Length: 157
Image (cartoon, rainbow, N blue to C red; front, side, top):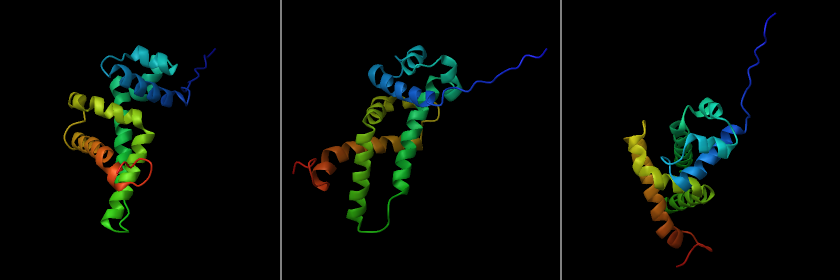
């Protein structure tokens, strides 16, 4: 008699639930204070599911950061060469603002954890510099760009 071993795949939504729970807990408690047990409980999964998708807690954090880096990189790659420099800058700033508003929790996490990324493998040099420039550009745009470049309800000038 042979025993049939059935390989079970994790719930397809589990990966996204883990990312959502990690983002919320990292913002609320900080990366270091959030335990794997809390992450899996908030996502409604077990520890092996987290290890299956991300390897460890650092893996889920790096996935959040790489996702935001990829989004920014795609935004930069999508800059049109048509129009004047002012029009291109306005379009870029408007797109960056829309992405930042849509992913505000992720922007908060980037600001909160940026200083600690030097302790994590792979986030040194160019990646860390791009992330710093992205954060600084966001701050500048929030204070100056919205007021002077974008007409509408966000402008106070």
